[in-house]
Image 1 (cartoon, rainbow, N blue to C red):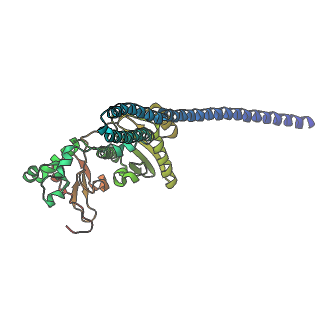
Image 2 (image 1 turned 60 degrees about the vertical axis):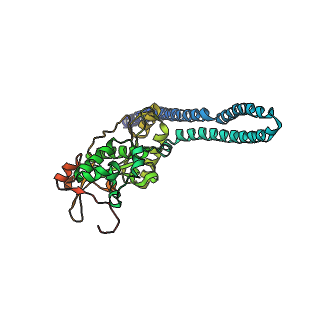
Image 3 (image 1 turned 90 degrees about the vertical axis):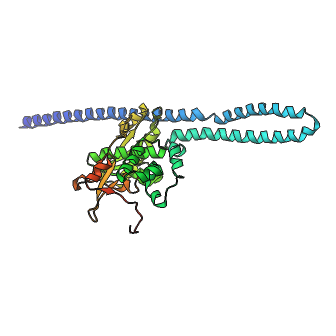
Length: 370
């Protein structure tokens, strides 16, 4: 009996030794994976620091550049001042005045040079500043504000895309369609082209059954870096859209901004599945793509606009069932939801909307009755 007990004890010991060995192997594997993860974190931090160092070193010498430019101007000014110094006595007052003016000029040129370089650094780190700085308006839009329209005609945003003669001679259907076509074709400022791109991307998600909120258009610079919020059940997409010049590249700073915005939204909506998405009409830098993959940001670069996508919103009033269509020029366009289940839809042609019984939206005037 003693031998049997000893045999069972040895068997248990062997089993425990095997389990201990398995635990040790698992621990070693965990250590290896931990080291690999730590290595990836270090590599990421090194890349991030290299990027920041690059931008800092790129512009850290700009006070020296400004001073060198100031010295160059001083040498040029000295020639002019010397000329007056050697002129007849009556030119002494002029010489002193020229010296004072040149000194003042050099001071402001130096300041302007430094500010210009600082602005370049700011744009590198906060690319959204370009949206503020690059405000250009076509001559057609500027001239349209001064055309001889009546007060009632000016309430209709369509008038900005038609001459007074066209507005008064065309049918409602014709002038609304022409205005829509010109809206698509006309050169836009940076805000206008950004809005167009956000609406286009939002339309893509509406077609996939998402309820889209056009945060960027509705809230402007208070959008917390979020242009669109697309929701389907508990799934939320936080979308940033960048319609940039094809020669520009989007770097990681723009991706970092979206990552921060998405994290903030997660904290405020912990019960929802939040996914950040980044759309761009241009190229996204490789490091920005790598970072996006690591933190779960879905990116779509070189994603161009289809300028002919259907953008007339045909909406049925929940108050009285009235059928109303909204052009992208109209005041309530971005707040109107298109619910397919209720018979609402998008279309390209004004005639198509009117044929199905929809009329153009009136300009909203608060609680005033029309």
